[in-house]
Image (cartoon, rainbow, N blue to C red; front, top):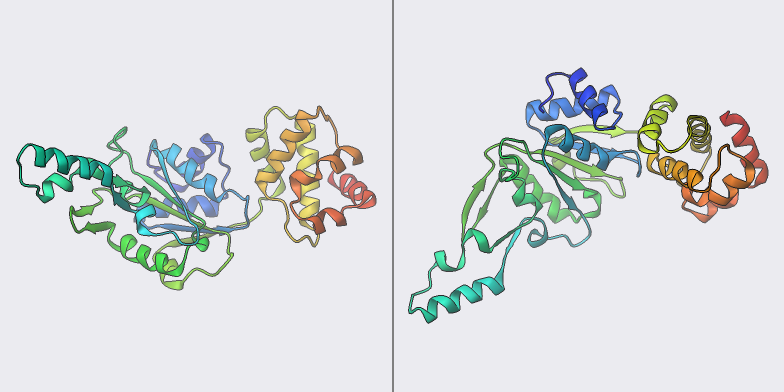
Length: 295
């Protein structure tokens, strides 16, 4: 359901087990109200992709996701034709003595719709709902693909030479994410509302963990979140994100750990830290100090 206010946006996101800051809820509310794309940056694992999933749940529609990568082209992102079915239709027409036309070869059923084109069309399962398009990790795509997005996001329409122009009857909510592996061009950012998602404060992260890893005891959740916040204060190559905190709580629960101790932390540290240099820094003394400070 379309939120009526910032507070309503916060409440509806919370109902989807997404605990947003007021600044992020404001950005999402404005993106919906102003029909502008929302560009979200932040470290990996802080909830950028989950924001789009929560927004889709909030609006009662399915999420369309375009995962970006180097070499991404329009055939993978927008559309392509189903050539085998076109050839079959051509042969059927020839066998029936009919002269093939554009209507024979370029019909809607032969059009393979990729996420960008699907976002311009109504949701068949819920025609009245607004589509949500996630363009994930745009910083991994090439600059020519950014230029293509500029045109699409300006008018929310696309021209297919053999088929015609497809124009969105209702503009989708577009959420673009970036991990800042490279700078995205200013021209693309200017067409969007912008929000940085940082690591949450301790109480909000605890609420997230409680919702996503409810099988873990409350005491262990609180101690684990405190430990992770100690790690983030260290000079690590890659600090653990919220996703790693959730995974760590689940791992501790799977090992029947009821409270943090140096051995259990040492055994599971690879769930939190993904680089050998960071793991090497965490010797027994450092682990013990972090455990003590996390209480």
